[in-house]
Amino acid sequence: MNKLYFGDNLQILREMDDERVHLICTDPPFNSGRDYNTFLSDSLAQKKAFTDTWTWDTAAQDSRADIESRAISSDTYKALDTCLKGYDMVLQNIVTGNKGAMRAYLAFMGARLAEMHRILAKNGSIYLHCDPTASHYLKGVMDAVFGVDNFRREIIWNLNTSSGYKSAVNGFVRGHDVILYYVKNKDSFVFNKIFQPHKPEYIKRFRKVDEQGRHFRDDRPNKVRQYLDETKGVALTDVWSDIMSFQQNSTSVERLGYPTQKPRVLYERMIKASSNEGEIVLDPFCGCGTTIDAAHTLNRYWIGIDITILALDPMRERMADRHGLKPSIDYQIEGYPTNMQEVRKLLKEGDKRKYHDFSNWAVTRLGLKPTKDAGDGGLDGVGHLTLWDPQQMKESDSRILAEVKAGKPTMTQVRAFCHVMDQHKAEVGIFITIEPVTAKMRQEAQNMGTFEHNNKTYPRLQFWQIDDAYFQNPDIINTLVRLPEAWRIRPTQKSERHFDNQQMQLLRG
Ligand SMILES: C[S@@+](CC[C@H](N)C(=O)[O-])C[C@H]1O[C@@H](n2cnc3c(N)ncnc32)[C@H](O)[C@@H]1O
Image 1 (cartoon, rainbow, N blue to C red):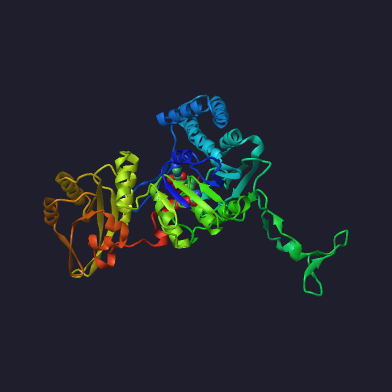
Image 2: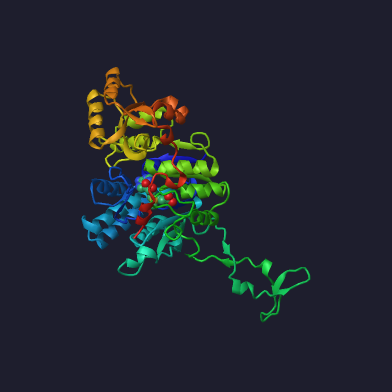
């Protein structure tokens, strides 16, 4: 069964059986030192899609200590630990600045790569997508974990990006990504050779045509006829220049607006080369689901993992749009609420990050954008509302805000939200709860008054209590939350989903 997990991949990988998957294609954060923000036009709504900045903090130290303790009983961890200790010397044990960041990043990646090695089938392969910031260190880690002999190729994906604003770069423009390709066992692995069409100049050499209309040449020294339809094409090398990045192909319909999305054909190529139909492909840093989309297209089973709900949403929508797949029906989904029981479970764990994710999930159900401080109180989601004033015969722009409360809502919280609405000059506020609101709170909502649109009146403060009826029929939201007909909440257009396009400019240095 295909499966999507929402959570930290280390825990999820650790729960997976040995030798479970046939191929891993993955594109982790690169230690680029950049936060991939959503840079929405509304300054209130800025939320990290994910952070790619690393520090030598307690988490990094714990991760290193964990690797060291596992090294006692695991050869893979032992090799990893030795490698990281070597890097400590290269990086002079420095715990601040770039060197500290690199050490933290390598501890993060090392543990995950060790688990990927364990769950990879005996004849399995792995493609690790990196950029030059850390690819040289990661190659050492891969050598330690997978074995020097199991290294196959360093693939260069030529991004062809030396145009536009990049021309202002002081220095050579970075024009490639590195994809490290390893197998688990060099003596037995799946590889389906890929051929590309010959260049037109080569094809022109087959200018003769036989009685059956087949093109051939016989101008080689041995004079033997070589038929064009018998040549397989040119065997693909490890420099891939024929796949456009989204920087080059910025208007591609494939783009979902996820900041680090990669082209599907790139991942299709790895999957075709190193797996067969019916095998399992894993991407533990799944982003908006390029690998799993490619795997499904090529009739492979798939497992995708990502830590942020902002990735899970476009991923889910993509699998629905492209393959008609529904979560919990056509594939399993874990860590992403599909009923109230799961919502409560998510919140019960008391994990601050999970609470943020729940809050992001809730506001994005309304078509709003999560705010920077979502989950911290005050304001969790923001969106725009355009109203038509029939008297003035003109449109006016206003804000719609949302606040999410997981526990029992209090009057103080409702009043605080009314204050936030006034502060931000929001016409509408939606107070989202999982517990019921009281009659007094409804009275407070009445006190907030109404607004007009096209001669109709709507309440300014509205409540949405998330319940199982919503999960059974998400469209019910349009009856629970009353907004002007023309501006009612509906799924955003594919090209506009989740992220604004401007942020694509942030892709890689
Ligand atoms: C470079 S992006 C992958 C983009 C993907 N190739 C695509 O085409 O959409 C890296 C992803 O790793 C995820 N990620 C970072 N740390 C993670 C972790 N510990 N567990 C799971 N996912 C993680 C981020 O949320 C981000 O979506």
